[in-house]
Length: 296
Ligand code: C5P
Image (cartoon, rainbow, N blue to C red):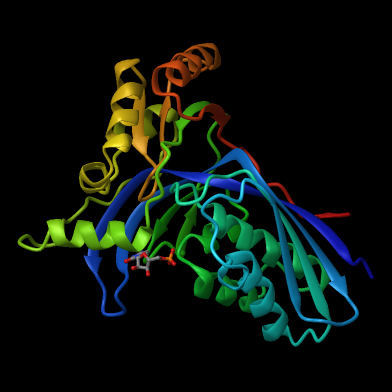
């Protein structure tokens, strides 16, 4: 039996994000478009004869909370318990995706642990126990577990409609030096809408091209989150000033990203913005396939 698996845990951006009404369980219904990108954390999962779950983290650990609250730790504990695995599990996590950035890093780490552990324990990809763990861990985890790189998300994010991947494209990604709490962003949005009914959003068709994506690109969190964090407004304005095909905030922030006419133009803009803003500006690429767990 293999005992060690290595899994790449890519970040995502939301190419569209509409927040609908608040539900009885306190969550909000969404209408979103998830796209995986090539900025990734790395997870190594190893089975041990005994002991509980251990998590060690290296890389960019700024903004991370206690180990026991980490989604990668909770993912390993939850799946081991649900499938009745009595041995130990050691997880090594290398962080590169910034925390509190709207890029889904914690959720992707959790999904990577579920996929790696499932592979080692011979749990099938479509096993309902895996799906249940993903939904319990967080609203973005089911997308990363799904194996799709592009999908529409409904419900609280867990109802997924996979879409054929679009050709790999460069994005300029800017991470302003602030952390946005997702719960705080939802509360601020709900507060700003207190006097109005939940918006009704036309059902968007699946995009077949980057032009379709550009035509539908919007994020309901932008106005409220940019009021809370002027740095995010500054980053989005700076991207917009360079004439992108579209520019957006991802998730509930803090990252913003934009698509330009070519890879070369993206590199030129990223270099100019690094000087102008003094914050991390990267050229990343949309993924066309989700990397699979490898036995290590
Ligand atoms: O599911 P996740 O743990 O990522 O969500 C964090 C918080 O964001 C939730 O506790 C909730 O306050 C808010 N949320 C929401 N509706 C969603 C997703 C998250 O209200 N669809």
